[in-house]
Structure formats: C-alpha cells, structure tokens
Image 1 (cartoon, rainbow, N blue to C red):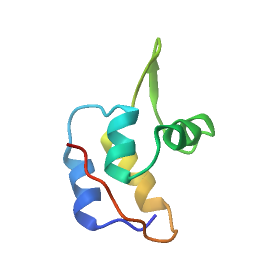
Image 2 (cartoon, rainbow, N blue to C red):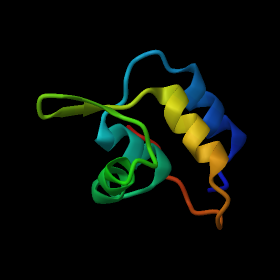
Image 3 (cartoon, helix red, strand yellow):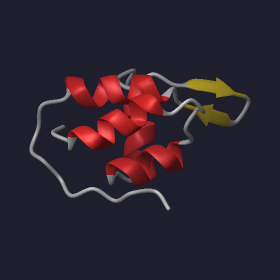
Image 4 (tube, rainbow, N blue to C red):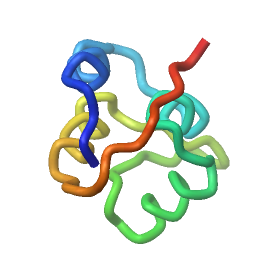
Length: 77
C-alpha cells in the first residue's frame, strides 16, 4: 500500500491503541477488510473479549510492508 509519509508518521507517533474503525477510517478501508486482514494474520491485533485493538506502530509497519496501487485516503474525524 503506497501511503503518504505523513499518514504513516502519524500512525507511528500515536501512543493509544487503535480501534478497527480508527484503522479503517485512516486507511480508507472498510471495517470488514481490516477484520479480514487480522483474521488472516496479516495485521497484528489484540483481542480483549469482544474488543479488538491495534498497535499504531504495527499498523504503520504493515502499511510500509505493502506494495500496491495508491488509493485515496480518508482521515478519521
């Protein structure tokens, strides 16, 4: 995935865990796509009961490891 450096830098700088919705909004993906990547073991996540959280640095590293066509981004509000 080819993302602007500032999005990856922003993810790396965050200290609080991200929700699936946070990741979906920042990366312009659907929640289902994020869940699918977690289920496949491609995107590291932690589950606490029914709650799923992602480490922002892990998400940034995952983005850096992807090499696909650039897509438009939507930023979380």
